[in-house]
Image 1 (cartoon, rainbow, N blue to C red):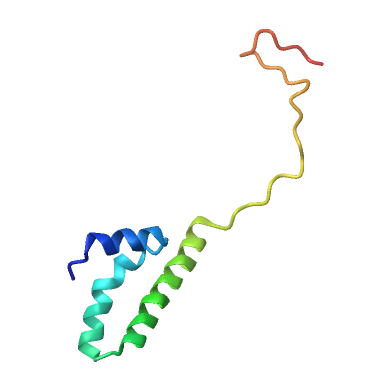
Image 2 (image 1 turned 60 degrees about the vertical axis):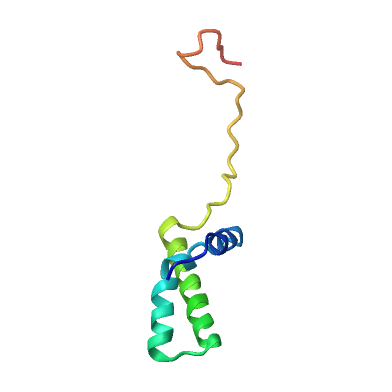
Length: 86
């Protein structure tokens, strides 16, 4: 399937760029299996949901910020010649 550049931009604007990966395959499947519009749309949405869930597993969930604060006071370093402990 040769997608219109405008459609590609719209999908990316909506953060649905992942649909582009499976759209050709799903369009061929829809023609072969004589799927209706709603069934075709359900497959596309299902692919996107599965892709996002897999992405969460790969990249992990965001970690909460550390509760332990590290004050800059008293920081010394040999790289900072003027640093002295407070």
